[in-house]
Image 1: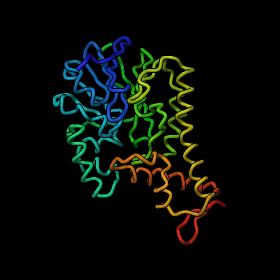
Image 2: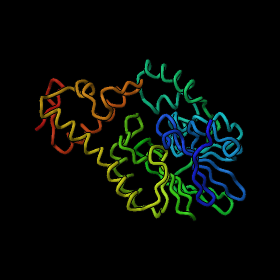
Image 3: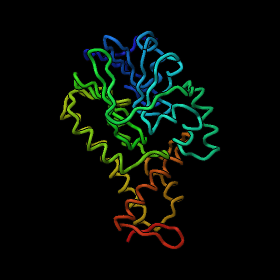
Image 4: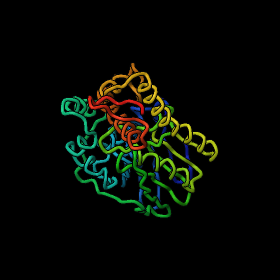
Length: 299
């Protein structure tokens, strides 16, 4: 395997996963203090980093999904933290299954997939953290800033003295925000996008796609484009309903979040959750209505 591409920012090293951490991979962040060696998340690339991951004393998960826990098996002695709203998903498969919220048949196949493709292991020893928790690594502090939406516990991990923000799955991708699981929230994601723009950071690290952004104007432009995908999905829904009243199942089959050719196990479930949230917003604003036959239509 060729040497991993990486970037150094004082006590922080970023090891880039394949294609700048494109799913199913991610980007590995390592933070070294004088007392504690910490890592943020453990994506697939963590299995190829070596001692800079394996020697970690502390793992801080910005949130819990299979692609962020693919290297937890490498650090059995490290202390693992996850936000209180995500920690049960780290501690057990049952907790992770509730986190996803998919039907049992999908979950059964998904468990096999993440065990084989992501080396998934539960960490019953995981400790919960809350908003604004601080870890002193020895001359370097990390602050957790709760920014839910992608998951209920999704948090930005901010290396304060250096203005470095690991913004996780506010990943600035062309796909846009993902809010397709049981604990996801479209409304929270909107608020978190506003909040992350206000962070006093000078370096932004994403779990996927962009990797590292060091120019504020470039970051804000990428964030606007990322947020615009929410509006594009809403516009797609309204376009479908302008054509004809449709049931939720019909809207899911038409695809709003994913392209038609996408075929992962969870896609129909994620589409349904995503569309349900958009429909709830549109009903609440009076832009659509529901017929007695459970079809949605424009007002």
